[in-house]
Length: 105
Image (cartoon, rainbow, N blue to C red):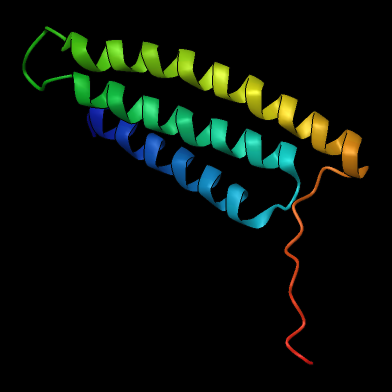
């Protein structure tokens, strides 16, 4: 196996674990961490795309996209944590609840 394939498989695994955590956990903090894990997988996949087999040069465009993505991810995480703190202050819990409307009349 080449390192590019190992990077791609690791990126896919990270993204899958993050997606699973995002779908399963109702806690907002765990959802934010899961989104960060998914972003890490996406960044690793972009880095694996930057390497060309048989060429010693690396494509700089995916690297620039990853650096930009890291800055955006840090900003979005800070914003999400501020929203989670405000939700905790208002409701007393940091969970997403799915409320069902009663259909009985």
